Image (cartoon, rainbow, N blue to C red; front, top):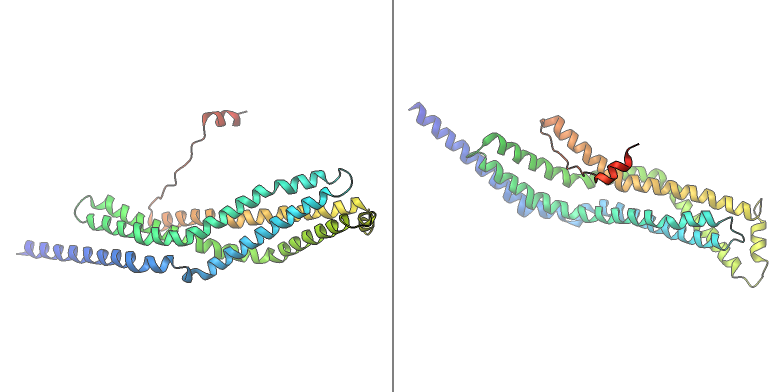
Length: 274
C-alpha cells in the first residue's frame, strides 16, 4: 500500500513537472519571444546605437575632410598626418560593422533565446524525468542560462557604454566640429581667386604652416582617442559583459559553460617563437 502511494505521488510530481515546463515552453515560444524581439521594447537601446552610429559617421567624414585639407597645405610636412588620417577609415568601418551587428542581435537574440533555446531546454528537462536525469537536467539548465545570457548581453553592454560615451560626448563633438571647420577654411581659401588667400590664412597661426600642422596633429590625437573609446564601447565591453555572465553563472551554479577556442595555425605559432 505504501509502495503504491509512493508511486502515485511520483507520477503526480512527474505530471506536474512536465506540465510546468510545457507551459513555460509555450509561453516562451508564443508570447515572450514576441516581446523580446519587438523594437518598441528596446527603443532606448536602438536610440543609443543610432546615436553612436551617427557619431562614427560624422567623425569619419570629418577625418576624411581633414585628410583632404592637409593635402592642400604647401610642402610635404602634412603628408604623414594625412596618411594616418586616411588609414583610419578601416577602423571606422570596423566600428560601424560592430554597431550594426549589435542592432541586429538585439532583435534576433530574443527570437533565438525564447523561441528556440528555452523551448528546447524545457523539452530536455521533461525528458530528464525519464532518461539520464542528472546529465539531462544539467543540460537543460545550461540551455536556459545560455538563452538568458545571450539575450541580456547587448542591452546591458549598451547601458554600460552609454555611461562611458556620455563622458566623451562633448570631446567627440568638439573634435568633429574642429575637423570640419579647419577643413572647410582651408578648402575655401585654396579655391579663392586671391592667390595669397591660403598664405594669409596660415599667417593667423603662430608658426604659419607649421602652426596649422600642429593643430592637425592635436586633432589626430583626439581622433585616435575617440576611435579607442568607440572600439572599447562597441567591441570590448560586449565581450567583457559576456565573460562576466559566464563567470557569474559558474559561480552561482557550479556549471561551467565553455567557450570554444580558436587554434592558431602552426605557421603563426612558429612566428611567435623567439
